[in-house]
Image 1 (cartoon, rainbow, N blue to C red):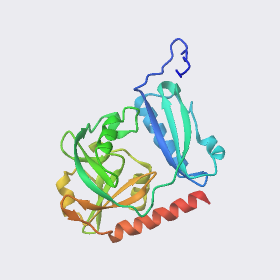
Image 2: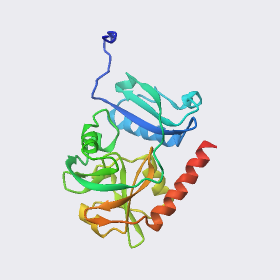
Image 3: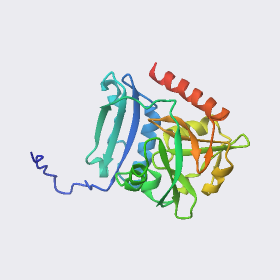
Image 4: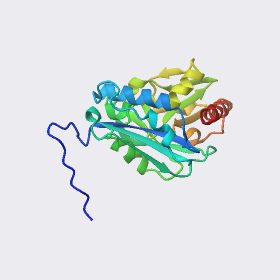
Length: 246
Protein backbone atom coordinates (compact mmCIF):
# COMPACT_ATOMS: atom_id res chain seq x y z
CA UNK A 1 0.00 0.00 0.00
CA UNK A 2 1.36 3.41 -0.95
CA UNK A 3 1.50 6.04 1.81
CA UNK A 4 -0.94 8.93 1.59
CA UNK A 5 0.31 11.92 -0.35
CA UNK A 6 1.00 14.82 2.01
CA UNK A 7 0.49 18.27 0.55
CA UNK A 8 2.86 20.82 2.03
CA UNK A 9 1.70 24.43 2.25
CA UNK A 10 3.40 27.03 0.02
CA UNK A 11 6.66 28.19 1.52
CA UNK A 12 7.03 25.14 3.76
CA UNK A 13 10.52 24.94 5.25
CA UNK A 14 10.58 21.13 5.43
CA UNK A 15 13.79 19.70 3.99
CA UNK A 16 14.69 16.01 4.47
CA UNK A 17 18.37 16.65 5.24
CA UNK A 18 17.86 19.51 7.69
CA UNK A 19 16.84 18.62 11.23
CA UNK A 20 17.99 17.40 14.61
CA UNK A 21 16.91 14.80 17.12
CA UNK A 22 17.34 13.76 20.75
CA UNK A 23 16.94 10.28 22.22
CA UNK A 24 15.95 9.88 25.87
CA UNK A 25 16.11 6.75 27.99
CA UNK A 26 12.76 5.92 29.59
CA UNK A 27 12.45 3.68 32.65
CA UNK A 28 9.00 2.57 33.76
CA UNK A 29 7.45 5.51 31.95
CA UNK A 30 9.83 8.12 33.35
CA UNK A 31 12.17 9.90 30.93
CA UNK A 32 15.65 10.62 32.28
CA UNK A 33 17.35 14.04 32.27
CA UNK A 34 14.57 15.74 30.31
CA UNK A 35 15.80 19.28 30.93
CA UNK A 36 19.35 18.43 29.88
CA UNK A 37 18.04 16.88 26.67
CA UNK A 38 15.86 19.91 26.05
CA UNK A 39 18.84 22.24 26.38
CA UNK A 40 20.81 19.99 24.02
CA UNK A 41 17.99 20.12 21.45
CA UNK A 42 17.77 23.90 21.73
CA UNK A 43 21.53 24.28 21.21
CA UNK A 44 21.35 22.16 18.08
CA UNK A 45 18.33 24.04 16.76
CA UNK A 46 20.06 27.37 17.36
CA UNK A 47 23.24 26.24 15.59
CA UNK A 48 21.31 25.05 12.53
CA UNK A 49 18.85 27.95 12.60
CA UNK A 50 15.86 25.62 12.91
CA UNK A 51 13.64 27.32 15.48
CA UNK A 52 12.58 30.81 16.40
CA UNK A 53 12.26 30.67 20.17
CA UNK A 54 10.51 27.69 21.76
CA UNK A 55 8.18 26.94 18.88
CA UNK A 56 8.33 23.21 19.65
CA UNK A 57 8.49 22.04 23.27
CA UNK A 58 8.12 18.33 24.00
CA UNK A 59 8.71 18.58 27.74
CA UNK A 60 5.02 18.89 28.56
CA UNK A 61 4.43 15.43 27.04
CA UNK A 62 6.44 13.55 29.67
CA UNK A 63 3.27 12.60 31.57
CA UNK A 64 1.80 10.90 28.51
CA UNK A 65 4.56 8.30 28.17
CA UNK A 66 3.51 4.64 28.54
CA UNK A 67 4.46 2.91 31.79
CA UNK A 68 7.19 0.94 30.08
CA UNK A 69 10.92 0.91 29.37
CA UNK A 70 12.24 2.17 26.07
CA UNK A 71 13.43 5.19 24.15
CA UNK A 72 11.68 8.51 23.55
CA UNK A 73 12.86 10.41 20.51
CA UNK A 74 12.27 14.06 19.59
CA UNK A 75 12.77 15.26 16.00
CA UNK A 76 12.67 18.84 14.76
CA UNK A 77 12.89 19.98 11.14
CA UNK A 78 13.48 23.42 9.65
CA UNK A 79 11.58 26.11 11.60
CA UNK A 80 9.77 23.35 13.46
CA UNK A 81 8.40 21.82 10.25
CA UNK A 82 8.05 18.06 10.58
CA UNK A 83 8.44 18.16 14.37
CA UNK A 84 7.66 14.70 15.75
CA UNK A 85 8.05 12.66 18.87
CA UNK A 86 7.72 8.94 19.30
CA UNK A 87 8.20 6.30 21.97
CA UNK A 88 9.57 2.85 21.27
CA UNK A 89 9.06 0.26 24.00
CA UNK A 90 12.03 -2.09 24.19
CA UNK A 91 14.32 -3.76 26.73
CA UNK A 92 16.91 -1.33 28.02
CA UNK A 93 20.61 -2.09 27.52
CA UNK A 94 22.26 -4.17 30.23
CA UNK A 95 24.10 -1.66 32.49
CA UNK A 96 26.85 -4.24 33.05
CA UNK A 97 27.82 -4.60 29.40
CA UNK A 98 31.22 -3.63 28.05
CA UNK A 99 32.68 -2.96 24.62
CA UNK A 100 35.66 -3.57 22.42
CA UNK A 101 36.86 -0.41 20.68
CA UNK A 102 38.24 -0.43 17.13
CA UNK A 103 39.44 2.41 14.92
CA UNK A 104 37.14 3.18 12.01
CA UNK A 105 38.51 4.30 8.63
CA UNK A 106 35.67 6.83 8.45
CA UNK A 107 36.30 10.47 9.41
CA UNK A 108 34.13 13.28 10.71
CA UNK A 109 34.68 17.00 10.23
CA UNK A 110 35.71 18.72 13.44
CA UNK A 111 33.41 21.66 12.71
CA UNK A 112 30.66 19.81 10.87
CA UNK A 113 27.13 20.01 12.26
CA UNK A 114 26.59 16.29 11.67
CA UNK A 115 29.52 15.52 13.98
CA UNK A 116 28.72 17.99 16.75
CA UNK A 117 24.92 17.53 16.82
CA UNK A 118 22.48 14.68 16.26
CA UNK A 119 21.29 15.76 12.84
CA UNK A 120 19.16 13.96 10.29
CA UNK A 121 22.44 13.67 8.30
CA UNK A 122 23.89 11.09 10.70
CA UNK A 123 24.97 8.54 8.11
CA UNK A 124 28.72 8.58 8.79
CA UNK A 125 28.10 7.56 12.40
CA UNK A 126 25.55 4.94 11.37
CA UNK A 127 27.87 3.53 8.70
CA UNK A 128 30.68 3.22 11.25
CA UNK A 129 28.36 1.54 13.70
CA UNK A 130 26.92 -0.91 11.17
CA UNK A 131 30.41 -2.02 10.18
CA UNK A 132 31.03 -3.46 13.67
CA UNK A 133 29.62 -6.60 15.32
CA UNK A 134 27.56 -6.35 18.52
CA UNK A 135 29.65 -5.41 21.52
CA UNK A 136 32.12 -3.38 19.46
CA UNK A 137 32.20 0.40 19.14
CA UNK A 138 33.92 2.28 16.32
CA UNK A 139 36.36 5.07 17.11
CA UNK A 140 35.88 8.06 14.81
CA UNK A 141 38.66 10.54 14.04
CA UNK A 142 38.44 14.00 12.55
CA UNK A 143 40.25 15.35 9.49
CA UNK A 144 43.36 16.00 11.61
CA UNK A 145 43.48 12.38 12.81
CA UNK A 146 42.40 13.33 16.33
CA UNK A 147 39.94 11.32 18.43
CA UNK A 148 36.43 12.71 17.94
CA UNK A 149 34.01 10.18 19.45
CA UNK A 150 32.58 6.74 19.15
CA UNK A 151 30.06 6.04 16.41
CA UNK A 152 27.20 6.42 18.88
CA UNK A 153 29.00 7.38 22.09
CA UNK A 154 31.24 9.91 23.74
CA UNK A 155 34.66 8.64 24.77
CA UNK A 156 36.66 9.04 28.00
CA UNK A 157 39.95 7.60 29.17
CA UNK A 158 41.93 7.55 32.41
CA UNK A 159 45.70 7.80 32.74
CA UNK A 160 47.48 8.11 36.10
CA UNK A 161 44.16 8.88 37.83
CA UNK A 162 43.47 11.79 35.45
CA UNK A 163 40.33 11.79 33.27
CA UNK A 164 40.45 12.87 29.61
CA UNK A 165 37.87 13.36 26.84
CA UNK A 166 37.99 15.00 23.40
CA UNK A 167 37.23 18.71 23.33
CA UNK A 168 34.12 19.72 21.39
CA UNK A 169 36.27 21.33 18.69
CA UNK A 170 37.51 17.83 17.83
CA UNK A 171 34.09 17.00 16.39
CA UNK A 172 32.41 15.31 19.34
CA UNK A 173 28.87 15.89 20.50
CA UNK A 174 28.20 17.60 23.83
CA UNK A 175 26.13 14.62 24.97
CA UNK A 176 23.92 14.65 28.06
CA UNK A 177 25.84 11.94 29.91
CA UNK A 178 29.11 13.56 28.85
CA UNK A 179 27.84 16.76 30.46
CA UNK A 180 26.94 14.87 33.63
CA UNK A 181 30.47 13.44 33.80
CA UNK A 182 32.00 16.89 33.40
CA UNK A 183 29.85 18.19 36.26
CA UNK A 184 30.89 15.29 38.48
CA UNK A 185 34.54 15.60 37.45
CA UNK A 186 35.16 19.29 36.68
CA UNK A 187 38.90 18.61 36.54
CA UNK A 188 38.43 16.43 33.43
CA UNK A 189 40.92 17.36 30.70
CA UNK A 190 39.28 18.36 27.39
CA UNK A 191 42.00 17.59 24.89
CA UNK A 192 42.97 17.17 21.27
CA UNK A 193 44.57 13.73 21.11
CA UNK A 194 45.34 11.01 18.59
CA UNK A 195 44.35 7.35 19.08
CA UNK A 196 47.84 6.58 20.38
CA UNK A 197 46.82 8.34 23.59
CA UNK A 198 44.58 5.37 24.34
CA UNK A 199 47.57 3.01 24.22
CA UNK A 200 48.73 4.39 27.57
CA UNK A 201 45.25 4.56 29.14
CA UNK A 202 44.55 2.70 32.36
CA UNK A 203 40.79 2.82 31.75
CA UNK A 204 38.54 3.67 28.80
CA UNK A 205 34.78 4.10 28.92
CA UNK A 206 31.92 5.19 26.66
CA UNK A 207 28.78 7.18 27.40
CA UNK A 208 25.42 7.84 25.82
CA UNK A 209 21.88 8.35 27.07
CA UNK A 210 20.63 4.82 26.40
CA UNK A 211 23.73 2.94 27.57
CA UNK A 212 24.73 5.21 30.43
CA UNK A 213 28.39 4.52 31.13
CA UNK A 214 30.07 1.39 29.72
CA UNK A 215 33.70 0.28 30.08
CA UNK A 216 35.91 -0.59 27.13
CA UNK A 217 37.63 -3.90 27.83
CA UNK A 218 39.49 -4.27 24.52
CA UNK A 219 41.55 -1.73 22.54
CA UNK A 220 43.97 -2.80 19.82
CA UNK A 221 45.81 -5.79 21.34
CA UNK A 222 45.18 -4.71 24.93
CA UNK A 223 42.68 -6.10 27.39
CA UNK A 224 41.54 -3.59 30.01
CA UNK A 225 39.92 -4.32 33.34
CA UNK A 226 37.02 -2.36 34.79
CA UNK A 227 38.95 0.37 36.57
CA UNK A 228 38.15 2.11 39.86
CA UNK A 229 37.21 5.49 38.39
CA UNK A 230 34.94 3.94 35.75
CA UNK A 231 33.30 1.79 38.41
CA UNK A 232 32.77 4.72 40.77
CA UNK A 233 31.32 6.99 38.09
CA UNK A 234 29.03 4.26 36.83
CA UNK A 235 27.65 3.72 40.32
CA UNK A 236 27.14 7.46 40.84
CA UNK A 237 25.43 7.77 37.47
CA UNK A 238 23.06 4.93 38.32
CA UNK A 239 22.13 6.68 41.55
CA UNK A 240 21.47 9.88 39.59
CA UNK A 241 19.15 7.92 37.26
CA UNK A 242 17.29 6.47 40.23
CA UNK A 243 16.70 9.97 41.56
CA UNK A 244 15.27 10.94 38.16
CA UNK A 245 12.60 8.21 38.21
CA UNK A 246 11.42 8.61 41.81
